[in-house]
Image 1 (cartoon, rainbow, N blue to C red):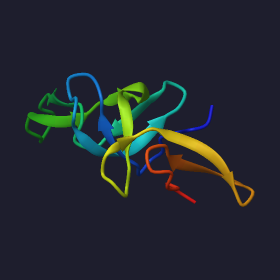
Image 2: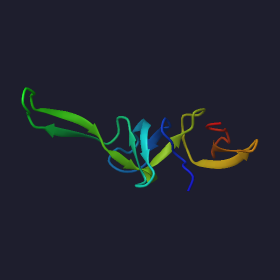
Image 3: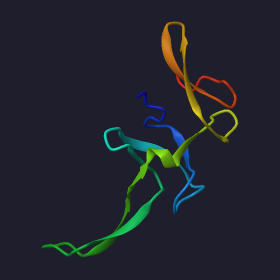
Image 4: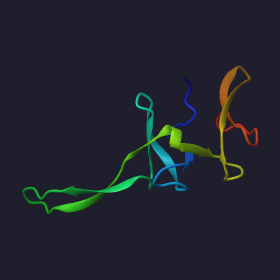
Length: 104
């Protein structure tokens, strides 16, 4: 299946604990169907003290399922579905709400 969401896309969370939060995709794991989004699904991780270092609580971004993310249209800043079309012999993604080409 073609990737509807890619690294660098601005997305909004449509369900779950962080519903309504927006961020940019940092990485996508297509095999597991998950993505890491900046400032979304942040948890605190406790790190034990080691030799010469203090213990700390570190904020860590967890992955979010791709089905819970929706692309933000660059022209209208509203969430939109993504479609594919062939344009000048090249497959491109487009916004279903406005019809604008997203990349390409």
